[in-house]
Length: 264
Image (cartoon, rainbow, N blue to C red; front, top):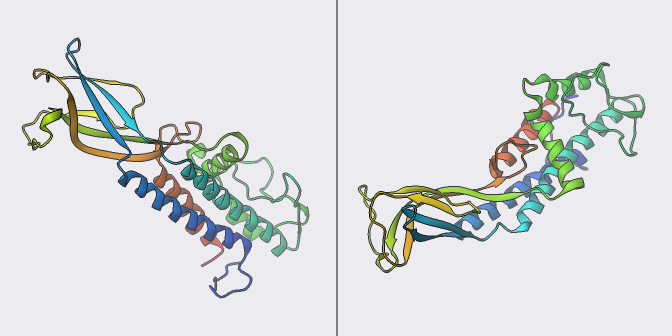
């Protein structure tokens, strides 16, 4: 049954309350994301190394606050809970009795098509056939890459946060730098100034080979930095992925895509 949400509706469905909570957490995380990056939480320390010849570059950075990873976990959990609350409501709408015990009524996120017709777990009865058809239309097994489907990733991230460890958020990015004597930091970079690409999120020293003569004495590395925070969970995203991109993809799939099938 398709419903039009009234902001003054009382009570607001618990699934929608969970969805709204996830949205607020998304916004809170975004604020912390930009506050952290604007604080310039890293610097590059360069040391001349004649054996290269070039410079050994060390990245010193302040890790992102743990609060960000905790908020991300809450965001993921509320998105996943919104789906499960919705599944429970669909069973009730279908005249059934939800199973509220462990492993009971929940919104499926199946990567493999089940041998039997899709159904929601319930003590008795279940969801209407029309609702089951809508649920089936958003299942990961309908995708060419089910493991990369937003519902698969959402469920796995939620399980990681609940049962294994706090999801890892890390610094990443790059800088296009030039090397200068430390006592000449007022030098202006020009297009002709030789520049070298280094990682601003590296945990190990980086070796940068240069063609020009090495600077004798203390060195600074200056240039344009492009940095961001990434989710570093290879079992979910094979390569580190911008945390705000992850939040946007998960929220936009659950809110407009899934809930849009029932609500407007």
